[in-house]
Image 1 (cartoon, rainbow, N blue to C red):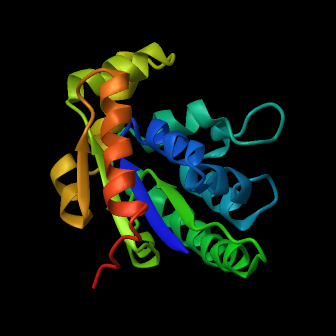
Image 2 (cartoon, one colour; image 1 turned 45 degrees about the vertical axis):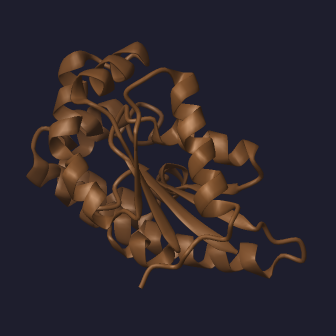
Length: 206
């Protein structure tokens, strides 16, 4: 079972890459989805977030108000790091068992893609992967894509400023794809990566 971590900042195209690999038969484990599950009301992570960022990050329904939390957590890189320090260890504790469950299946997937938004901030996930693919894009395009999905430009720029840089992600990556063209061009680059680095069995990092 080959494990490929796909990482990239906001608006880079990381989720599009994961979806493309899913269409080719990979099982995809989204760490964002895992994080949402482990910060449900009543969990230790939920309580830690409320204690750190205040009761106003809780919505009327008792769950986290993700918009309110984002406004506080992405106001500075330091505050973003405090959120990461709460969430990442719990996510990591869930991912390992999930991978082992997949590996134990009678018809286990040949390829598992870990959709990892913040690999630099949580390098433990690098150790779980056989390969790391970083998706890059110019900041202008990343902001445009985030705004097209409903985010304000100010919010998008604030989040990007709190994330690792493309250079920092590239240092941890085995391969880098720059997503600065059309969707068709991006998908073609993803297909070349799959054909060259995944379908051929890949190479485990040292």
